[in-house]
Image (cartoon, rainbow, N blue to C red; front, side, top):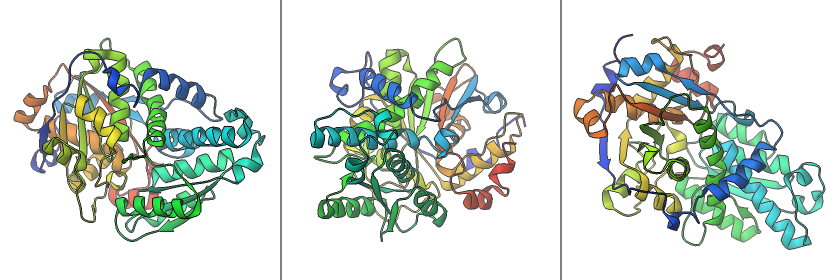
Length: 408
């Protein structure tokens, strides 16, 4: 293939320019995300059984087809056997919460090794964590609860697939399906936690609730640090395209790269489904705003109508552009990565993993947008493929073949 499919030029793309700050990472954002807190997360997570960096895959053929210098894709499908980057965030937040609660109840400082060895088994078993999820975050929280020995109740909304529900339940969590969308499930989990004395481990922040989402995002920073260490080019990325959701992933990437690289961090672009574009609409309004409705996008992990407030603090200051893409673009990218017509390594990517790639290819296919974003043959683009085929049945339905046959 010498050129991109016409699909990427013909589908609707919306863009809102951000107002990114220049200079060093601001001190005012360090209480949200910082290299100091990252170092603690890195040390902790690297000590967990099964930890290994996920690969950074060069998509050289696709870069040539798009008229770009380089594209590198951080492929998170193998993360702790959970299939997504979320394994880093939810489980790390569960661990941090348990350590704090054990200290409060016993006066003793617990480590992850203590919990893995069952040294505080009775205390941990008396603690219940809970959250709302589109799938991957809940799986991470459930896995963390199982690994570290506490109980877990997960809330999912009406359109979460049965495959994703079963994947959460596999880790011993009680799974409760609610009516409405993701944000309704967040409220249901919060109300039940207050009623039953559970601890909410949410990946989104709201007034009065910031500590746990900050831990979740700091866990994600491990993935970013790996990518920077693996980066093979002589110069750092010129562009980073990251999917949105509530903003936690995007903020973690933005903050880590900004504090590491300063003004050399590259142009930061946030990409969302056009049916669930709370960050895009917040950028347009200049303040956090909610989008309403059923948020019925195939990119289920990004079906969020309300921004995480602390994530917005980072993105408002650090993001250069906000894009929205349709579901059709995500499906086209899933097929493109699986078929690898440009000679690259085939990748089985989930629906939410490819929003960043979709935004990149759609922007590169439009001369006016490409010029506005500074895309061209000298660009070096970093993407975060945030999940593998976490719903195998849906993947096969969308791509036309089973995920296990793609990456043989």
